[in-house]
Image (cartoon, helix red, strand yellow):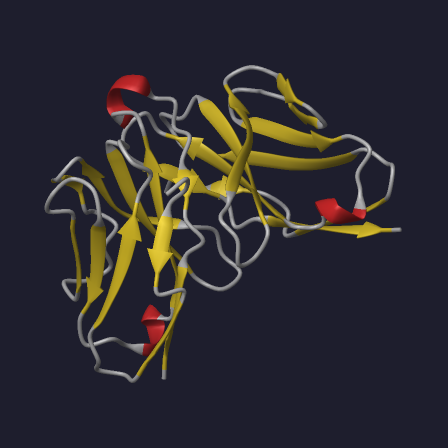
Amino acid sequence: GAGVSQSPRYKVAKRGQDVALRCDPISGHVSLFWYQQALGQGPEFLTYFQNEAQLDKSGLPSDRFFAERPEGSVSTLKIQRTQQEDSAVYLCASSPYRIVQANTGELFFGEGSRLTVL
Amino acid sequence: KDQVFQPSTVASSEGAVVEIFCNHSVSNAYNFFWYLHFPGCAPRLLVKGSKPSQQGRYNMTYERFSSSLLILQVREADAAVYYCACHTGGFKTIFGAGTRLFVKA
């Protein structure tokens, strides 16, 4: 597709359930990011992939959060045993650049997946 | 802690120039990025750089630790959330909490 695609757009989970959020980046984009955006806040970095390699996962808030990008294109963010504090919009972004080299920094975002944990 | 600061709201009248100010405490950041976000849509980049720049009605001022986004001839349709962000040269872009722009007709 022309842009970054995320699914589902909305997800309601009961506390303790596992959820999986999918991101389909722009074709050919090397870099892929996941961000978490709580209500009224800006996006906060979770993790970064360069192709299939997860080079930075320092932003993942706990070991309940896991991300993968096995073939260097589609990525999945998995949250196990969801808690109410996990409620947020999860934004995926991609970039055609290897960020460290190019340092252009522009991110192409998807529309986000809104997770509500009851 | 690396942080980006911006006002939570700004109000303007149609046709005016509106300024949204941003500053940061990010030690290795040299570039500013200004994103436009209509809730429910994908945030998109308006303007970026490490020097003053302009893209259409959007001007960006630049100092080492601060930047302003100036929107010329503001319209009701510009009412949205504007994010200021800094890139650290590594993997992370650090965002401010966003400034909601209100525009009066």
